[in-house]
Amino acid sequence: MSTTIQLSALPDVPMIEPGDDLAGVLIEAIGRAGIRPRDQDVLVLAQKIVSKSEGRYVSLDEIVPTPRALDLAEKVGKDPRMVELILRESTEVIRHRPGVLVVEHRLGFVMANAGIDQSNIPHPQNGESALLLPEDPDASCARIKARLDAEFGVNLGIVINDSFGRPWRNGVVGVALGAAGLPSVIDMIGEADLFGRKMRVTEIAFADEIAAAASMVMGQTDAGRPAIHIRGLAWNAPSTDARALLRPRQIDMFR
Amino acid sequence: MSTTIQLSALPDVPMIEPGDDLAGVLIEAIGRAGIRPRDQDVLVLAQKIVSKSEGRYVSLDEIVPTPRALDLAEKVGKDPRMVELILRESTEVIRHRPGVLVVEHRLGFVMANAGIDQSNIPHPQNGESALLLPEDPDASCARIKARLDAEFGVNLGIVINDSFGRPWRNGVVGVALGAAGLPSVIDMIGEADLFGRKMRVTEIAFADEIAAAASMVMGQTDAGRPAIHIRGLAWNAPSTDARALLRPRQIDMFR
Image (cartoon, rainbow over all chains, first blue to last red; front, side, top):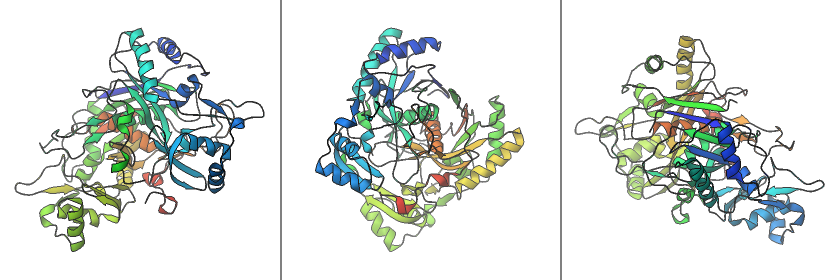
């Protein structure tokens, strides 16, 4: 791997609306930035712009909470319509307490509120909307990668990131929701360390480290930096999508 | 925050031995790299070189396991001397099963094996050694920062990172064990989003995102990249050490 890595926010990415051609927007922004993409350059996209381009808005005013959602909403102190939406997007409630609702999203992510967010999105007058995760973030990455690879004649890595809370530690960090064109997990089994001893650490969550690094550049409030270009990474391992990052329930000790 | 961030591995950092003047080694490596440090440059150091410079080696041959360690070692299938060491470094066993031992380290980190490692360290002939975490990683960062700040006449951020596994997700990511000169957690409470709505996300684990980004450059097997220089980050929040990243036990839902 290269020993110098550069992360740059694509400049002037416009507000994304449902139906926008996100790949086209990115191609224009890359051109404006004067970047000439190379093999193994990586583009990290904030979940929000992908969800917006895919029109993943829901009007809360049209949501009728079930009794289960009403009950849970009271326990966690959240809007029952939001809780209803969260339950619809989830397969299981993992933990809850006032102010916190951790679920397993139907895509397998264990996360707060099924990733449904109400910040940095437009709301109708006298109404409220919410934004769901992309329908299939790995597929979104693959589609965007296909367009960009064809446009620039290169082999790019694409990651969609989001900010997740963690057990035991304060604060959120960037995490990969989707990936294409790079190994989401790099297996180190059998590689020798500097003293010829076999490594104990088996896997590096490469796409999550990329997602966290990009998140560090994106910040949180400024939706003007939703796309980060990374140059200097290199890898030999085969590409795996972000599903490879999900630990199977049977071997997870924290549910 | 700047929109371009560069991470570079300091070149040719030598193998670190107990008693080595790590700050001096870093000052030399920074000079060799032709870097002229600036305010808010960040240096991320692999836990291993800090532990080595602090002589945190333990000879396993001198460890006599207690009955409790023998019992636990059989359950997890690990060397009883390693389990004894792990227990000595810990305040609580959080989870265990064959091959996995997750504890709360005396410093508050919830992590596998109390961070004790046997890879990338020298072992005596016919013997085995292990390397503990630094005695007080925040204090180590503060000491190194003081030396480097004085040498270069700037105000640097220093982070010590390590690779942690996580619940729910495969693979390890870089995490901050210690920090000085930067906000380990950045509080976003009350900041307005792009549409003037109040942000729900309260805290960003800034030092952990920095640690993960540096880990992406360090790799795992190659101990030749244990120090990463980062330029382009900027922050206004007051400095807090890495203890700020530890969620108080009383409000943690996953122990």
